[in-house]
Image 1 (tube, rainbow, N blue to C red):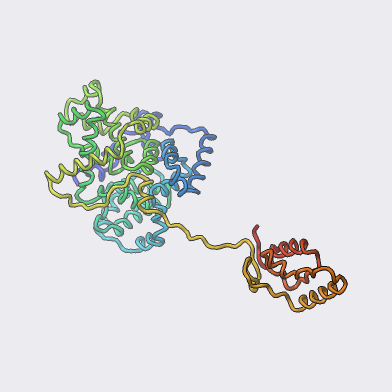
Image 2 (cartoon, rainbow, N blue to C red; image 1 turned 90 degrees about the horizontal axis):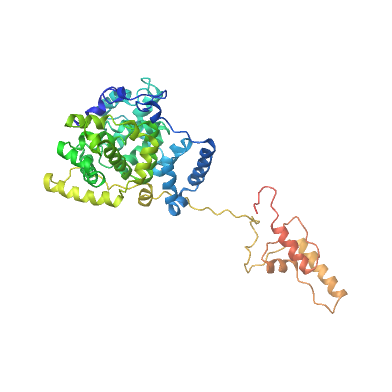
Length: 466
């Protein structure tokens, strides 16, 4: 709770007074245009939208065969018009919603724990207070935020509510309705960042040690300075990781980081933290103004807008050589040290899954059963093609056929009688003609063509798709 004291304070104490807010209520950096949204040519944006629509409409195929392409397109940035839908597919929230229809409505109608409801109520006005969606008390944005956070406390009563979940849910609500935002929040808390919001904050402390160890390889200068000053990682990385940088970076950078985070998992959060530490404390020149512990922490709380700029940050994050394997190996090392010094972890959270592909493999989506839809519909009393049973023609037409065959046989005794139309139809594998049509007397070759055409004719009350 002490480490999260800054999350529950007013906007000025959280650094909003030091950063400029644009007309939509987003952080854009103290030097104006450096943190603003980067312009994408309209033609390029339309092309990206078309590509993303194709991916989302054939999601299982793309995830199975072209996951690298999805990752590259997430690094370029998801089109704003499709970002909410893409986050649902990447996180597995779409699958969760399909697996639990009506679950959110059930939780929404239930009465929550008064202990959590009071805390949630006090935090509503602190989430993006200048954004038009959350600016008014009791507005639709704050109502939806309350519903989502309350539903999560009922979904995970053993975990309850953590103040860092509020900005996460608020960002989700800016891109999707409350029900979809709830399931994306569930995926973040259970799959991407498990244990982060538990009571003892053990998972975030463990990841702080992992971050500090990785920093030694990425920026030895910054690592040495923080070690000399004896600055615990929790003093600067708690808000970064628990809020997924939603309250730290300019808004355009937040969106780009989240695009990659939903695709590739927690390693993106580690990379962003390492890039910020490296460029804030990674050279002797930058350390001249950070002689003490207080100055160093203030430097990390008021980062330079240049290193938080969208284009610069994303490029550095993509190029930083920190892999999932390194993070997991370091996790095992720090977990062993934790158990030796502090004993067993009290938080028993599920294993962390690294991104969309790992989540899809762990929880494949429901596949709809293929329903038979025949393209040719036959009468109910007609035999199936290829069956041994011969169709029975109508009695009147059968008598006429027999009379015609007898007449032909008497006129041409030397020639063999022509096969009956029913036999030709059976040999050709087609059904008998409709009862209201009397078959004529064509040549055997013509009768085959005649009957095959009749079998493809649709009835008046049914449609036939060829």
